[in-house]
Image (cartoon, rainbow, N blue to C red):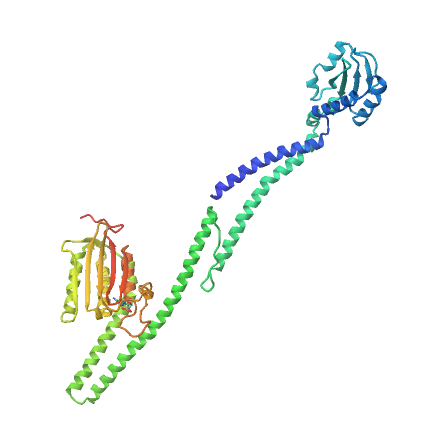
Length: 475
Ligand code: ADP
């Protein structure tokens, strides 16, 4: 849930709960504050009184007086009257005697429900008791202020309501306050954690992984932080490895340059001093100087390649090319190189045009790198397979050899810069060729797959999308 939605929900909950709380508390506090009578209470007093009266042997003044006196002493607000069937007052708490006629009794009852709400008239109730075949009456009267309903009304009229309502009001006003406090402190706590974890991100220490499953903005931010921290951590590891390999490369390079240079210097010195035995020795010395110089030239070319590579990828321009044509031309070069060598070359490139948008020099470089590797590292298999297939959305370039192959543990890393399977032992390369291939192919939004079974088949497959975003293949 988004924070905005959460805030709305909290506001709604706090409004409803404070209203409910206010009503409940008002009722509780009101009932504690207003201790008056209600009809239920009066009914139960009269029922009890009538029960006691019923148990008397005679309903004359002698029996009734002490009984009703004791009820009155417990309820001093009540006026109790015991009336005989003919209207004669047998008992009255006020001590009045006499006899009620019909009109007097009815007058007592007129407008009675309204009296509950606090008029000056008393509230009167009549209960009857049938005894010895005749009806006796118990008359209960009390001032309207002694009624609970009357008291609510009375308090409302006299501002005393403030005292009964102030506590519920304060408590219910606390609810939204407490809920918002909880909401903001929980947001604060989560931001604090995020802040601490972000401060902790550096190249030395491990990342702090935060656990926040919430779907709101902070939850999303936390998940982004986790991903970012992991990325930084793994990239730091890669940078360290990269740096180690760079150092290894430099030491290998100085060794790779020093060894031929020592040879070149030695033979050059021999030739200069004329210290060779015969023409054959001179020729073989010159040949070694030539070979080693070419080797060094090749190394320096590769070094230049490394520095040029990033620039080329930055200024990438696509043009429409016939890939089958381009591949056929390159393959023709290699057939010349391999001519006379014990190599079977299998070429499967369609005769028709396969037109795709690409950066021709870069794709050619990638293709040549793969071919060079297949010839250099797969020579034991004496086989080179080159293929091009076209599908609806993509084209696939495959280069196969049957050499010693690449072990599964190296396959994942072989495309990293400066990674060499032999761990840096002397070889012609810097472990840069395949990383160039991958970077070029990915810059074309394609991918490179590798599968290898030693001496059976080592296959590099490059897939390239036929359409490049930002470039329209119109023809
Ligand atoms: P290098 O410049 O050393 O050739 P690459 O990135 O081209 O670097 O290749 C990295 C490593 O992968 C090489 O050192 C080699 O051991 C291995 N490799 C590449 N292609 C093949 C292949 N076709 N068969 C066996 N090993 C290969």
